[in-house]
Image (tube, rainbow, N blue to C red; front, side):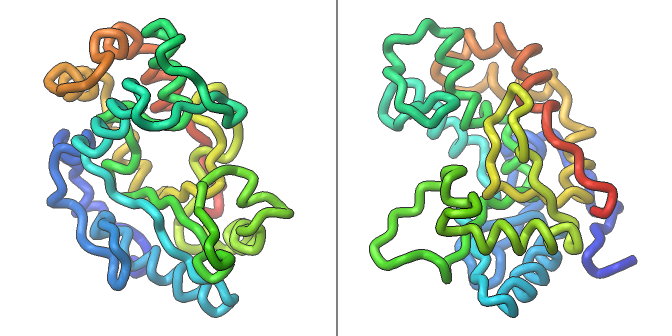
Length: 240
């Protein structure tokens, strides 16, 4: 087995791990202030070292997020404490939306608690720290990663090299669910196992037992949410 391939015997993924209620499957990423699945650390660090040879400082803004963090993000957006954006990235007045429309608006950019791939420790939101100009405010928006964006070099390098380390973009194109996120990388060999094991009943129980704003509205839509926003992701290229 390659040192960049996961040990399938170590990928049991309990329900608590899948839904972000437990963190015993994640460890600190060396020298970086995030946590990641134990089986993903070496592939990511190898990719980071390779990127450094090309003058890119590959840094994760976010990796593992637990259930309570995802609840906090959701609740802040639901109540208007955080900006809520439409598919074009324009701000929406959250209080002008009916509950079902509010659920839909949140899911464009934020996963429902329990359904976030970040719970698995296999996902990274990344940028090139070496490319950031002085006093620049990182936004994590698609424009930053396009051919004329501040992270265009990173995008081009990832296009050519990320598959070597098992990574791909699960939100590469608009599939009618989550908006494209060129900064979001997933370690396919590990994430695919978690994805196959995550069931709608697990999500229902996790959400039902939470202090989530709009909980009843989300649960009423959960079958469609599971189909469009959880299962509806890009498949990895064959070379991953």
